[in-house]
Amino acid sequence: MKILDIQFDGVISGKVAFGKSTYTEAIKHLIPLIDKTEFQRKLQDKKFYSKLERDITDGCVMPPITVAFVTDEDLRTVQDIESYVNKNINHSFVLDGIQRLNTLHRASEVTDFDDDFNLYINFILCDSIEKLLYRMITLNNGQRPMTPRHQVEIMIANAFDFKKLGISVVAEKDSSTIAARKSFRKSDIIQAYLAFMADSPIVDNKKIIEEKMDDLLVGKIMAVEPTKYKSSFKEFIKILAIYQRNPESLKWLKVTNNLVGFAAGAKHSIEELKLIDEDEFASCTDRFDQAFSDFNPSRIKVGKFRRELSCEYFKSFAEYRHLDADELLEHFSELTLHD
Image: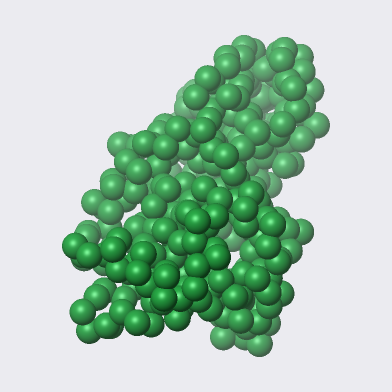
């Protein structure tokens, strides 16, 4: 694959490289990325892309696709990036163009393409998955090729090796298995990541139509400057791996509202949270639950309050960690006075 030019993206502190490959190279190296994980967007029925397939066979120029890498290597020149891309293409993932690649693959089964046919590719390279998601959402906003949740699914699938980071994640269909008792639900991890990115525990509301909720979510994520992140979701997963060792901690974290609120809050206090172990975390969440249990459940929206207060608790963890349940309740009651 050839790199033609590069530009620095100051918002994500990364590089955008503009390149090309022959159809043959693209089919060999990029098609395997399509089925890399179960998270990738389901391929549309081929009838939706049959016209494009015919056009490719007739010699049309395919619109560029976008391929991403997460790397902290210092790649400064066209030659540096070209070498890196060709050596590490198997570790990339397709941000935009899955359907076009699949269509190209089908067209190749009936047409022999020579080296005169080129696919143009935008390569995005940056050192943070959070910055990359930010760029992904800002580029796609308004076009709606994918919802923010689906973009997060793709990100999570390709950027995080959960087993290596120390936790087990299972799909909803497997959540009833014995192994799932010590695992996190994939849907909960996705919500936690959205909360982490949006800097807010409110990432879902069944009273708001999904399309409008997605608009609100995109607005929250776009409002957070990616270069100002003081922590990463990978660090968050690593502390989950530690805290889950205590059965009571794991039980608390497997409650969706707890995990989502914790993710949004922990983003601001990750360094303090690294200083405690799973037993102290269990003690902290026990005091949190004692304080929370004194709210009258008939007078509050329990799920909403749990998300917001767990977010507040861990957002200001240095301030709250040494308070007892009564002191926490006093603080929480002041925060929720007008809710």
